[in-house]
Amino acid sequence: MSLQFETVGVVGTGAMGRGIAQIAAQAGSQVWLFDAKPGAAEQAAAALGEQWDKLSAKGKLTAEAVAQLKGRLAIATEMPQLAPCQMVVEAVVERLDVKRQLFGDLEAIVAADAVLATNTSSLSVTAIAAGLKRPGQLAGFHFFNPVPLMRVVEVIAGLKTDKQVCDRLSAYAREMGHTPVLAQDTPGFIVNHAGRGYGTEALRVVGENVSDFATVDRILRDQMGFRLGPFELMDLTALDVSHPVMESIYHQYYEEPRYRPSVITAQRLAGGVVGKKVGEGFYTYKDGVAAVPPEPAVPQVAELPPVWVPAKAARRAELYQLLKDLGAGIETGQAPSEQALILVAPLGMDVTTIAAVERLDATRTVGIDMMLDDAATKRRVLATNPATRPDMRDAAHALFAKDGKAVSVVRDSGGFVTQRVVATIVNIAADICQQAICSPKDLETAVTLGLGYPMGPLAMGDRVGPTNVLEILFNLQTVYGDTRYRPSPWLRRRGALGLSLMHEEA
Image (cartoon, rainbow, N blue to C red; front, side):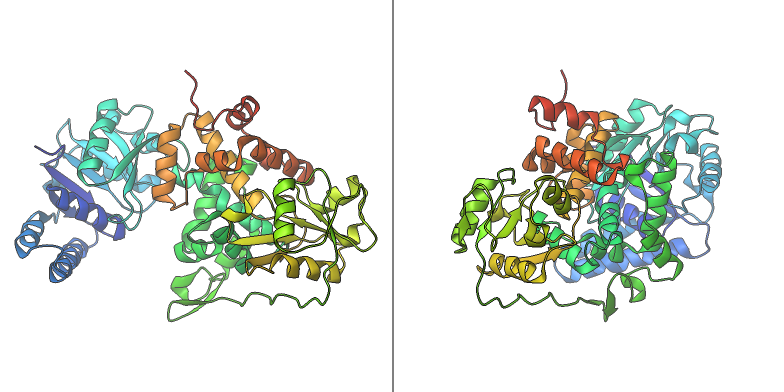
């Protein structure tokens, strides 16, 4: 069966260009490499050859297959040599003027029906195509680094892109072994847009002195199953990459509060403390290994106080069972005794507000995050309020660590840590669907493959429960008075009707 594109050009032979060239050659295409920097295309071809040789040495490729792959690479020393290419994809610097000039030059070289593709991650496809005579032939074809391993590609139609062009790019992505997802031409497309909630909300948590970087990372890994905590992730991607993306999407959406960047990353970028590649970010690194501060020891408490839980606590029955399993003395009266630890379990609200509204003794009140089933998490999270006595904080910590499960104690915050981060992720994803940037199915695919989340954001919302996510967001908006937390109409309507967040209207 013939390929969508037998002959492909790749302009720009850095990490992204090499990766695209690799999978194009492996799909069976003849690949022409071009780079304006003298010798760069030759270096890229040599590096790809070495990579295939290593795979052969490991028995993953035959010598014959390696020879065929190397034979599919050709070097273009001048751009006119790309004339036979049926498709040309660029992976050059993220500057609109550079990309416009490049495609203007390419349009005059290739055939009229040749497809032009941009690997841009942050620029408008429509804007890139605006000066072309045939803007219908240009589309976004956004891969992720490292290209051979990140098996998702966003196919983006500009305002004038022909549908057939996107259809062909999607088919070619499958021939390369990747999964295509269709996106509208909006800031951040799907993956970079959907990823706004994880890091920015975690930065807000730390910026409010709720907890430290390492604890937030531990909480989000252990409670929700993220592979990397947000600060580990930012160290890996490096702030000289991730912070400009934060600012770009924020400004392109005309200062939409949901995407607001943080002064923390701006300051660290200015100071050169950008991440693992320089040995210092949110963590310090020695020989590539992060120095992670140890967890605080579980307090030694001679005698644990009895525990009283108010009627409005989330998962109250489950919380009672957990307390019983931990051997706690449980009070069930209308009000707590003078000795009792008062345990609240709010969704989105802070411990302080609960104590004030319900007229509880704040000095003995501690919060616990019960958004998720306790059995499904590897860590419990407690929150004090400004008046919580140290002995009550320590008693709560010791009690919930009795069975060996990890416990983190944070300062008061609307929504603890996981609630507010997950609710923000779900809300942004719901609004992506509301704007029809992509289908719910493509959103879930793009995020799980492109960001490595344990599940898609809509599935995450369904797991927590859309009504619970709504309660968290409404309460966060009350606590902070910030429109950042206003619920998306997609989420609000489906939550009100008891529908899955994956539900699409007929």
